[in-house]
Image 1 (cartoon, helix red, strand yellow):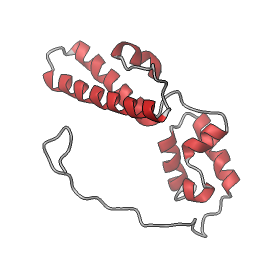
Image 2: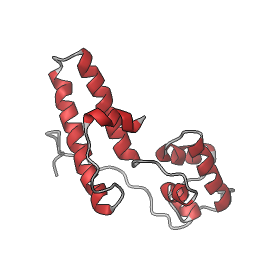
Image 3: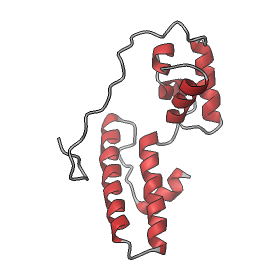
Image 4: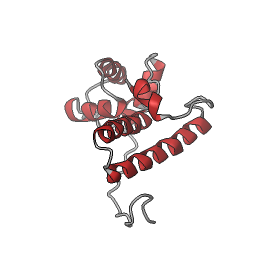
Length: 151
């Protein structure tokens, strides 16, 4: 299958080994892991970074296997929740950065095309999140308000 915005075919990638239970060398209890997730989020870390930090610094290979819940679900249960999903926020941040670049370099046609492709991804992702109930039905992406929303 071809890529959407590149004229290349993809490469097959490695798959994570199938593991159905937490390894016995994990020393943290599920409640400790949940407290650590909330603590790291309050320090300003996004959910993806929390998973990496727990894996690399605290020897928790998979939060979902250790606690039975994902990082986002743990945060939602503890009352801390982001306004937008992380992937949508990252795309909006990227679009805002490209718009600021295009203000200084208005003839940069390659990055103008990049902005159009990013905005297409944002709209597709927003359509999915509206369908699943994560975003409200009346939410629409606009470059003018994206900068205000991600700050």
